[in-house]
Length: 147
Image (spheres, rainbow, N blue to C red):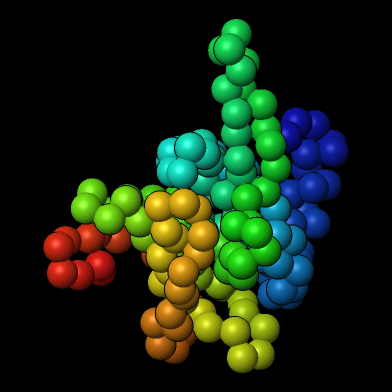
């Protein structure tokens, strides 16, 4: 962002943030956001990720060009932002992820943990019980635990 337009955009963003406008977070959740943190390849799909938003599907053409396919919501079953660092279970080939909300609507969990099957279907999401807003960037998996 450069010049006056960039300054105006930053002022609007700052004002919305100052007044805790939930739309500032909601808008990004439903889009691919900047999708500038990492990439994951699962179920023959390449996805660009940032933890504040849904994944963005990508396709590489034979000539090496990368095309944006749009937001990946797993057939409408993704209902929270998606971590920028999901993990692929090396035994089951499941994709393990979490998503958190800064300002959830009433009755929405703050942090959910989820599992996507090897064929790309969300098989479960679990409310983690976190009771206050937080920022989580990454997590680990072992044979017995995800944390």
